[in-house]
Structure formats: C-alpha cells, structure tokens
Length: 169
Image (cartoon, rainbow, N blue to C red; front, side, top):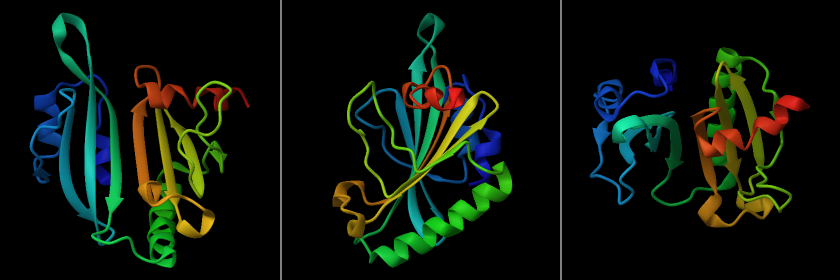
C-alpha cells in the first residue's frame, strides 16, 4: 500500500486518477462522490475506494481512501488472519505503534457500528489510518469478515473524525 504516501487531501478526481493510474478503474459508483480501483496486494484482490467531499465552487475534494481486501469465496479464518498479520507488520514498520489497539468505532454513545475482531488506529499528521479485520470464529457476520484499511482526512472525513476521541486518551 505504498500509494498511501502519495495521498494529498483535497486533491480532485483527476489528480486522484494519476495516483492510481496503474490500477484497474471500476465503472463510476452509484455514489457520485466515489471512485473505485481494483488492485492485487498481499496476494489478495482489493477494491480501493476514494471518497470525495464537495468543496468550494462544487469542486470534489479527496477526503478518504479505503482498501477492502476481498476473496472470491470467504476463506478459512486462519487465511484471513495470516494476511492481516502481514499487513499489520508492514504498517507497524512504516507508522510505528498505533495510538490504540482493539478499539471499536462508536458513533456517539451507541453500540459499536462496525464490529471487528481487531482494530488498530494511527494518527499520521492530519490523517487517521485504521486497520481492522473480522473473523467468523469471533462471531463477526460474513458481510463484515475480511480485512479493511481506511486512511482519511482527520478533519474533513466523517469516519476519520469519529476516531478523534482517542487523541484525548
């Protein structure tokens, strides 16, 4: 996921296409403010989603990039966990110890909104980086199983802002 270092928040769709020019582009998403690309990393197919927020004069600005690793058929938990450990190791080497481990995203005082087997959260400059995975053996429903990486603008991306409570810990 070397492309994370090339991300600049607030760039437009054309600049984003340049960053992902070597990835296969998917047809426009039904949400007008998203672009998707397909890549293969860690020996697994991945969808890279780029989310935009409308800025001044209607210009769409990049606020989040997420990577969802997917399998044609959901493999055994051990296979997902092994890939997760590889990705986690690389992110630890690049970004150091996370600000938090094992936290669950909560919106307000409600229950966790995206249950996972594990969550790691880093604050990288003005960005929030999360790595999570879900396994069936932990009671995670299949729709949430797999590996997920989200990198977002800590101020402009709603998902990333929801982690700011950890900064006060």
